Image 1 (tube, rainbow, N blue to C red):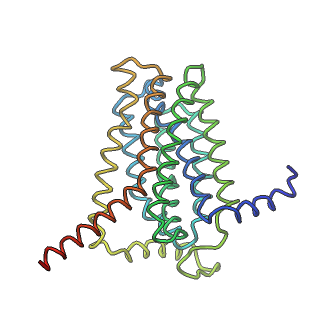
Image 2: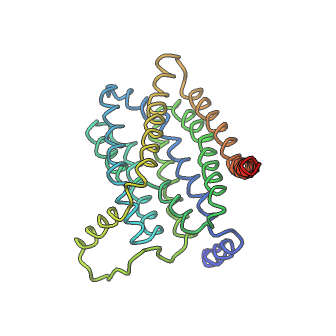
Length: 306
């Protein structure tokens, strides 16, 4: 394909697809890259002589930076647009994951994990894009498809990582592939996402940088925390239980059950397969529950009338 005709081909493809179809690709590539690193990262650290305590510290630092930076990145994307923030965060993650294959010091890993934790919010930003561009009546179905695509990535990523880790310097090869996937993902955001800013405010380019930072924090106080604290609490406990399971799964499989990297990848891929099936049924379950709600409400009115 001629490079001069590539923008025209991309434009034609965008017209043929739904305005939010690019989100499926972004979410898939993002977790495809992560699913190659996550199952073998702990075992790689153990091979470098890093203790379980220090590995737990790396996970805690990553989660803490995610907690602190999540609202800031979200407000930043509200002000400056999803497209700009997505492409910037992916570029930073691209470099950070590439460096993971080079360093061997615990302190350098700690710095890299802090950087990744600060900027790795692709899934959150994509779900914000769903709220921006998808009609309300279709959002549940689209969220289910997004989850299906992300789970679909877990069917292939762990198998690839398990295969590569059998070779010498396999982790270096793996981080190189992850770097290229993040680079491809950033290019897809720039090519397919809406070029118009979704910002809530018109910001003068001549404003000082300090004012822009203050504006980001001001957006956080516009949230109705009294109403939404329950949702945030549910999300917290869900993330806590998931992290406790996945962060320790690879070590338990290898150290207690003697599994190789390859079979560990097969095990996690099976989890991805089950997740795909369940997420594809979200839309049907929602419609079924909605019909059941109408039926029960009508029955209650009928009994009340009698």
